[in-house]
Image (cartoon, rainbow, N blue to C red; front, side, top):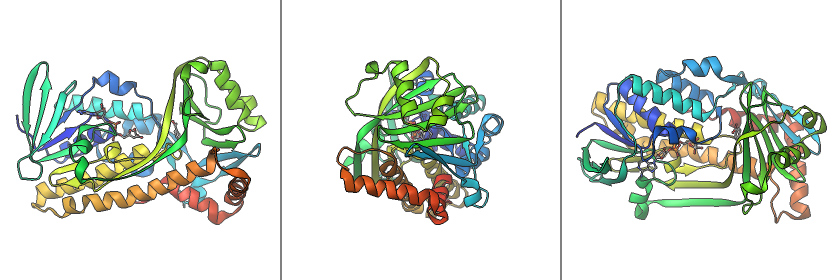
Length: 390
Ligand code: APR
Ligand code: PHB
């Protein structure tokens, strides 16, 4: 079997890349270890920068997102028992973010790919990558008990943090990592969001909280929890009680509770692998970098990687040029590091750390107060929240 670009992973990075390449007339095959239903079962963040929305439009898959996505002009910060709006749109000259779940975005991409009849091999086992330092890369895998060889011009490693692509070049990668001393306990519930027009980020003595949404009838909430906490220790009632204690009284009063439809604990990590290109192998999305979810940059960074990578590949096939491909890693990493900085900063500002001490706590209090009372400081938050330009 032969294709132009072999894409490993059918998460948002791989699917979006496949769609953009297809639009430009470039053949691609996606190899995915899991089933499609498994991929759609993963619950992740759901705040899209304009850059990501524009890319979905460019890929021709933006229509449901425009119908069902909920445009946000603000965020809210809760601390010391009070809630403070940050007018993101006003502070950025008109920019917005869109609330639309990653699951829905992935579903739109999967459906468009299926409708276009593009090849996706689900349950591809033992994927291995070869020959990418030369001109004729090969991807080998097992499917339905048979060994398959896929020859290609390029391999895109869109296979997430635990994928095979970065592991294959482990000896050539420089890794930068920070692991945070807490996790997020997340609950998804079919209840109306307490704050439909702005995500609410809270810092309380009891720890971080986040009120988010997927639609006008589905909400997503999180509380900071110890890393060794177990989901089973959190009944729905305990979760709702804890969330209410971490926000201001007026918001707490308005939270509509109901049975959880998903509940999980996720660790928080900052991680970057450099570079993002090895000959004819590229890393994109979570395969190359992880941000802690505070600020919701993970999916948006995957989208900007894909924008740069697809542009480089399209230029290559159109103009026989390697310029965009040669520039890919440096261009992508420049934006990645800015989002890493923002996500690390917002995480540090909004969470309670075990070893903060009284001085550290006063620093956090003073910074939060400064942030909401200085237009310059609020603008820094707002311009990062809507996303850096490409
Ligand atoms: N072979 C084939 N597929 C693989 C392999 C492998 N060896 N290893 C992993 N995969 C698949 C996974 O099953 C997954 O479906 O690669 C896909 C990677 O998808 P994601 O983890 O969603 O990563 P990405 O597409 O880069 O999306 C980034 O996901 O974690 C969030 O915050 C992150 O929103 C961001 C987005
Ligand atoms: C979410 O909706 O899951 C979400 C929103 C904002 C974040 C993180 C997660 O910063």
